[in-house]
Amino acid sequence: MQRLEEGKDGSRTMLNRYKSGHPDGDDPPVGLAAVSLLGAVATGTFLTGLVLFLVSFASTDWLGIEDGLALSLWRTCSRNYVDDEWTCVPWERIPDFVRAAQGFCVVGLLTYAVSLVILVAYLAVPFLQETRGVLIALCLLTFSAGCMVLMSLIVMGIKGRDFCEDIKRDDYKVLVFFAEGVDTLGPFYVGWSFIVAVIASLITLASFAFCMVEFIRVNDISD
Image 1 (cartoon, rainbow, N blue to C red):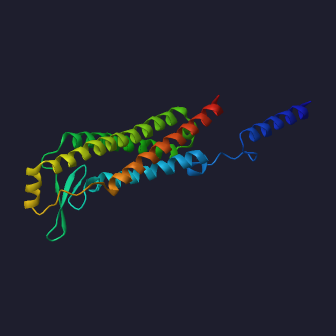
Image 2 (image 1 turned 180 degrees about the vertical axis):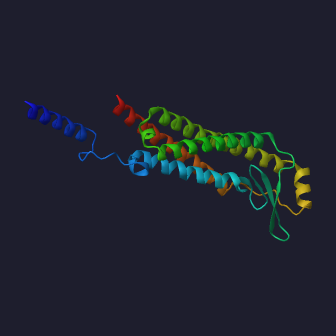
Image 3 (image 1 turned 90 degrees about the vertical axis):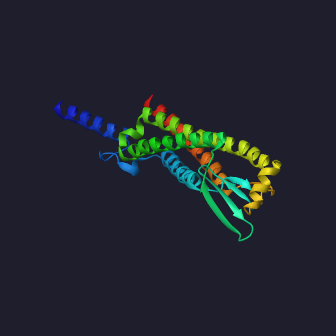
């Protein structure tokens, strides 16, 4: 009878090991090795979006007038047609639309920073990878970061075009710029920094989608 009970106990132990996915009874892997495929993809897309956002955030070629003016969040650049050199200076009088875009981007940057802290904890602490609260926080933060960048792009794109067109329609401003060696009669253009910000926003929102799928997977397992 004692041997029979010992055999049953051994069977239960082996069964529990196989249910946990570790037939040898070893502890599950920790760190990056324990991250699911969806978690790894969500992490990779988030980090890519963050890097691209930082590049666009700090660069100076968002939009402007071709071969004349280049506008960004923090500086304005002008090209002197005499010596063909670009000069960049901080905004002297910041238009309201630029302030709004700056606000959206700063909030987005803070959201990226908080997301990065939570993501590092998610990768470093194995049990957090199966915690629904952490995944919900990452989903909300990545979605907010992508939306903040997108809102700044909408403001800069629409109002920035109007700003450039107003310069070209104002003869006095055109003459003032011309006296400084700057041609402001060229066509409106969208710079590479703006395009990088668009890509950053889309990739960040894609990270949110992967994070949501991972949350659904973990939620199904928990239930």
